[in-house]
Image 1 (spheres, helix red, strand yellow):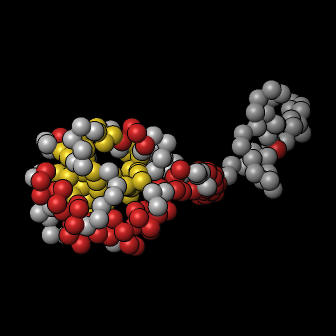
Image 2 (cartoon, one colour):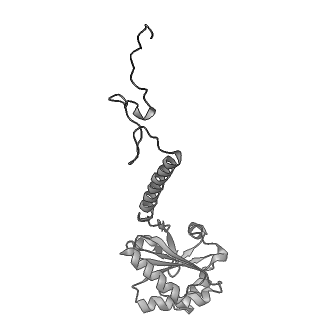
Image 3 (cartoon, one colour):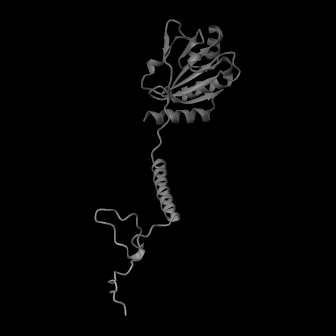
Amino acid sequence: MSSGSEPPAGPPPTSETDAAPPPPGRPGGFRLPGMAPGQRPATWLIVTVAAIVVLIGAIIAVDATTHRPAKPAALKPAPAFTLQSLANPAQHVSLAAYRGQPVILNFFASWCAPCKKETPLLAGYYRASKGKVAIIGVDADDSATAARQFLSANGVAYPVGYETTPALANAYGVSEIGIPETFFLDSGHRIVKRVLGDVTMKDLTAGVALMDGAAR
């Protein structure tokens, strides 16, 4: 029998699961529903959640973009002009005289082979509309005498301006080899349709519809 006394028994060792909770005021860390206190989410789970968040943000951004109304394309203004009248050199033909009115503008020449087919069509269309559809002809790179004979032979009654220089044709982007060319202008004198080569009745119908539609 020992004369010494046994040391007093101390408290049993604690395990990691019995560790004390974090002190008040200190965040307990990120937890998902169903996770035990102190348990950390697996790396794959964090990555998956982050990917889902990014995907949802991308879907919202795309949806907002696709449902946003597109801006209409801007119409190019038609260059203004004042030309000497082919029928009467003492008078002038001006686009400004048709302010607020849609206009068909036709560049032609008496020597132009397609114009021999196109000009009678335009003259007949103008007569049929009884002047309700404004047409202006621009005789470019031509002899005034030959142009007058050409217009008379084809019964042209709409005003025609005589261009002594290529300034106006250049302003509209019309070249000598591009004649004839026709431009359809709305009431604000913006170009809504351009036809390279001789126009057809189908072109006239479609162009006038665009002119009137833009005017509303």
